[in-house]
Length: 277
Image (cartoon, rainbow, N blue to C red; front, side):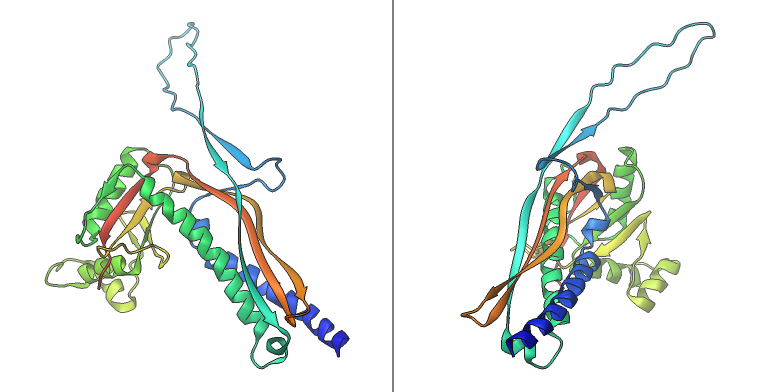
């Protein structure tokens, strides 16, 4: 019986790991929106990300040598550390009904994905530029203001906005209110049909329940370019198992090793708005 159980669990563990890894990769919203550094093959626990200043070009005179510009770089340090979660799979649960491989894999994958997202979202609070105020609802006008601020700061590439679902609810309600917004056009119609806001002012809008609502019923989202924040991945999702004979169970230990940091403060805008229904 023991040999049979072990063989069954060996097969089960493979499925748990596969499901957990898939869930972790699919459920982490923020990891796909920031700059990623894979430092798995680098020695040490800290990465130094260089920051180069802007260099101005000038008109040239034929036959005259160019003047050189001194380039002095600064850097941002990101230190990696371990995060982890553990669940226990008892022998009876493994032999029971349902699909423990999928269920436990999903639980473990979600735990790591949520931790990555909350760590990156916590960086929103460090942005020096902020729009909004307590009890103020998010509107499209604020998104245009954020986009203008970032483009004036020469933020490169795409812009994304990450908000609590209650904040985007207010945005959608504002867009679909024909009395307050009689000329909403296609964006208004799309929001009314599908509840999907999409892209406003060149900003791709995302929702995340991992944004915390404070005691005043407000939350801090952000609009940013990917170069505003970074994640340094030393080792991605991993599961190790350990048998506890006296407990008649297996410990499933999920871990990841990474660090997060703010790369450029001028490439993000904190969006502090009401998050209540």
